[in-house]
Amino acid sequence: MTHQHNGFTWTQTFSTVKTKNNCQSLVQTVTPNQGPVYLKIDTEREFQHSSDLGWNWHKSWNIPNISVKFTLKNDEYTQWMNCQVQLKAVKELQADLFEEVGLDGTTLYELIDGKAFFTGVKFNSTTYNHQGHKFQLILIIKERENIILSLQSSSIFVDSRRSARDEHRQIQYIQPFEPSYLERNFCKKEKCQNDIVDAPIENNENGLYNYLTAPNIRNKIKHPLFLALKFSRCFNIYYMNNSEVQNHLVELQKQLFSKSQMSQYLLVFQSNNNRIKRKIEDSLNQLFGQSKIQVVEKKHLNQLIHHKLEFNLEDYKDSYNQLIHLMNQFKQHSEFHSQHPKQKVQSIEIEPQSQPLIKLPFNHLDRKSAFTKYKDFDKLPTKNFEDEKLEQQQRQEKFNNLQDMENYEKIQKIVKIQEKNNNYQQQYQFSQSQIASNYYINQYHNLNSNFSMLFEQKLQEQLLQFYMIQQQLLLLQMPSYV
Image (cartoon, rainbow, N blue to C red):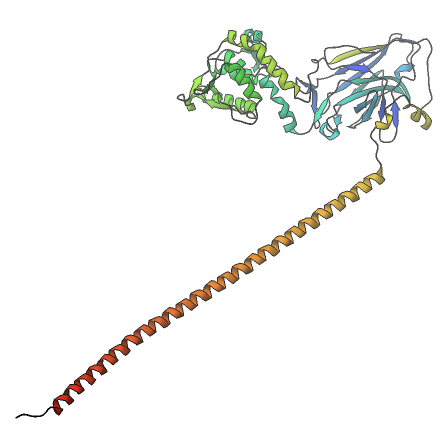
């Protein structure tokens, strides 16, 4: 029994829930013979919804309070009011088979006068920890172990890391917008002397700040082209003069998707009010801080190399189909898909049957036979500890072999380094010895040259003396004629 609503839906289910200890069938085992029975589920506030994540929630937040009201059309049969209601969080393993992921808080209440109220309940795990499986809430109305009604909710993406949410939040500023949105008039609700007044959002710096910070404007359009058209007096787009682009609107959309290179476009704002200027700058940096497009105040813009992008509503309309095509291509690479918009209240009616059907609580054999209809039961996740132990030993052996190889390579490297050092030392010693020997040889040659010069001088002196003595002797031997 499916009830179509444009919002967060609850649908009757007849699946099986796998828990730590056993498996619980959600097939209806008891029905009222007087009725019909009405069940009303109401949440105080809604789960978050975005076009990329669908329904999503943070692990540390309390799940929105859920009130359950169980009523009978015939008030005389009040025995059906004394039953229990249980809330579970599950993930889908395959068709008609869920696995419980757990909740923190009180998840089982007695229906008092047909009413129960769940508050302070949290998810105790995340989608990331369960291989990307989204969670679903299961609401079970039962009498002891007999199932009266079971409902499953829409899928919910649960995360605990801010980066996981910011990774997908970029859709806010890259999703092309309908041209008709530019013709809408917006206002910001503000408190003034205990009254709430509407502050109009106009085409100026105050209007830009009010638009970015207005809590009453849900699902804001934050695309740069929308801001540049809606607040053209204080927000513009500039591009580098040397760029040759046929259609700047399409090229800007492509660069909004890019995460690898800096964009040639700049988002430029201006304000004469320092207080508002800082707030606008903080809001824009928070919005576009993760993109490759820079936010610059106009007085810091170098207008020699940047040129203002001039376009109007008609230009945007002409490029709208191309922008949508680019967005569809981008979404094909996204892991998550859009879901229906929100709505928080749902009523379900159970039609009576001719005879009440009551079954005893399941025994062990019943739980085994509950799975006979699943052809792919062998494919369900199982765990063989012997195989796991063997795999662990193999991994340890591989790790040890790798360590041995690394140690051997390290030893070889050390030996090569030592050999190189020994060669360098031998070469150094040989070069030093060569230098020393050359030095002594040079000294010896210098000494020999000095000695030979002295010897030649002495020899010349001796020869000269010998010559003089010979001359004197000849003079003495000559006969005297006088």
